[in-house]
Image 1: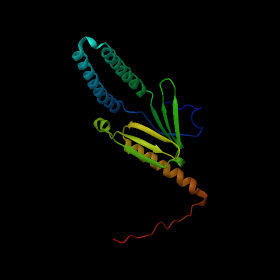
Image 2: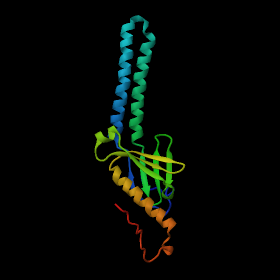
Image 3: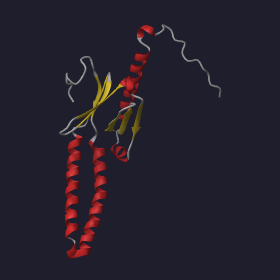
Image 4: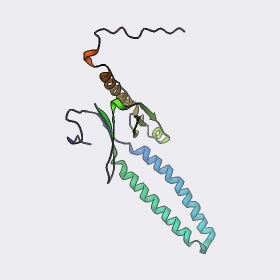
Length: 186
């Protein structure tokens, strides 16, 4: 996604941007559609067994095949319209083919960041995973991101830096900091 002056603040910088990897979604679609195809096969078997009394089942069979193909085409088209952006102020998720939907979470509002690695992510390799970014009122998912652990490091580091700057402005920081000196007994 190119930087649009109406979309970003004037002094906002993009740190990272990415898209959903196609392969994990494709694997999910294949596995999911395999299960549907198995159901269609069962319906097809029922059509053969019932013979002439199967007019309704033939319509059901053809309808399921049509819906399966339409859903696969939609998911492939949707994959090209998913964008994830990390700026120096917020995290942005953008999705939509016809209707565009944006989700924003400012770094000072982030409460938790998780990574989920699914079966299709493992098959895709490349440290692919889904990142879940949570605030008190919003959850933003970055699905099937390549090098997800590196992206989480960027998110956590930027969030920590922004929260530190808000809580401890430069003018209030001491010149020396003795640090945390508690010792744990083993």
